[in-house]
Length: 278
Ligand SMILES: [Mn+2]
Image 1 (cartoon, protein in one colour):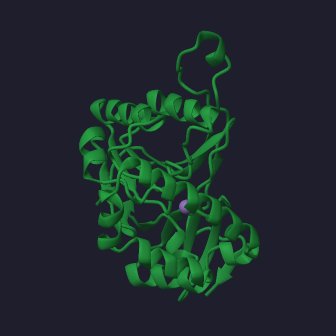
Image 2 (cartoon, helix red, strand yellow):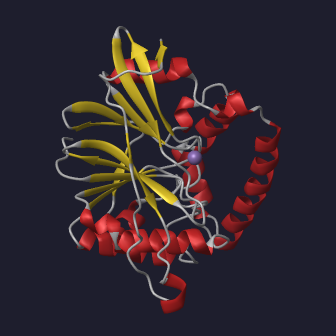
């Protein structure tokens, strides 16, 4: 893959019926700023839960329609599974025009080999989670789950959310972050000088020295009710851009293009400040 033009990267919107403000921010983004791009990369956990492509309850149907409109406008949409919406399947892609990306996927932006990931594969200090991940990503386990009724799947998902919330609250914060050795291993294996991922909800741009050359790890931000964020690649380079609700949105009751105020540039792999040596 060697994309040209403007590419936008977002992850961790965690859209759900409980987050109407974040949903309206996302719909405004998809109706506005996203349409100015050539490519949109959705790097996982766009939905807080996904129990099958046949579940058209809110906000699934609205978001699918919005994504279909984005692809119909000529933007290429690429979607990667997160740890919460990994059951997004072929029907979703058919309905929205999104293409599913494997985790990890290697692409080139501005001539740089860039590795795209959701991020959970990098959190190898969380041994219990990695074991759980291997189990639930088993295709047979997934097929057995999808064969059950929607009502039964909803119940399983609700039980899982309760248990996962309790388990996460008990884990030490460093266990929930990426393991630096694992990051280096992926960058080496793919020969990448840039890694873009979400999942950890710790947005930032980290310079890493690997075998004498520098790489950048850009972590995407989690979206909140009043602010989202995207990473942007243009021919001139990389920057971050906030996604903000438009002020007149609530008064007019329709989706408008979100206003954009300010953006922050990202270090290039050749400019160094604080560098982690690996
Ligand atoms: Mn995640």
